[in-house]
Length: 94
Image 1 (cartoon, one colour):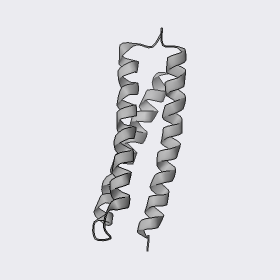
Image 2 (cartoon, one colour):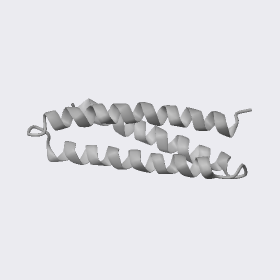
Image 3 (spheres, one colour):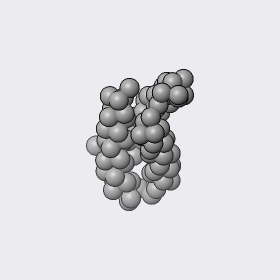
Image 4 (cartoon, helix red, strand yellow):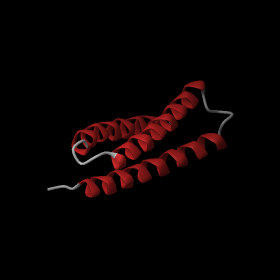
């Protein structure tokens, strides 16, 4: 059975990986800011906002009691998947 600590570790690793990808894309966009379209800038802001929310959700998960962590885990998995899809869609534009 998967424990809360196992899930925390998995989510932290996913967030670190996604954060690195977002940081890399943000640096690339800043370097090419003159060429970045309004749509690309909005997409980057959306990714940054989603990352912030993901960090907040992970914090809530860590602070949750044992009885709530399974429900939070399912919600976080969905959110991480959504963030990953947004990131891949943005990467495809560059």
